[in-house]
Length: 154
Image (cartoon, rainbow, N blue to C red; front, top):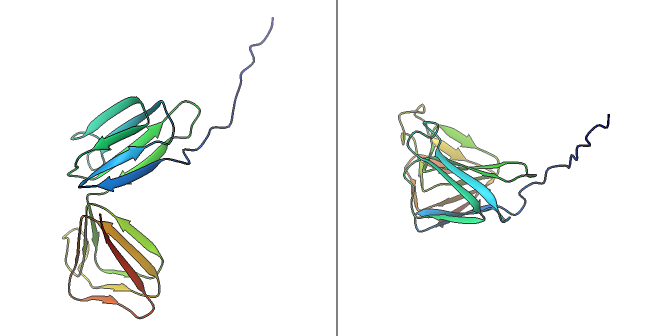
């Protein structure tokens, strides 16, 4: 009796995939034709948003109102997951390493959300980039000498 031979190849990474933000929405480019893209709401495991696009390379979403997870899959590829954040809250934090924040809205300050403990934000000796449609930095945020802060409106 002859055994069937299995062909096992090392899965490929989505090295050319990207998320680009534009006019309050975003574009998902898988970098490969014939992919499946799943978009779902992060906070409630897809209860409010669950969309699947089959056999695509690029999709465009005009807007989004909550945090989303995007999963790109294709046979022979390692799944790629992106997290698209609606709002990032920076509060009661000392930022001392190079950091990039990207969301629809970024709020930085002592009391910008009740979910985190209140406290000042200190940014020191690092490079911080903030990309969003709306960025608000409130009083008591300290940006120390030796820090580079780049603010980019999308």
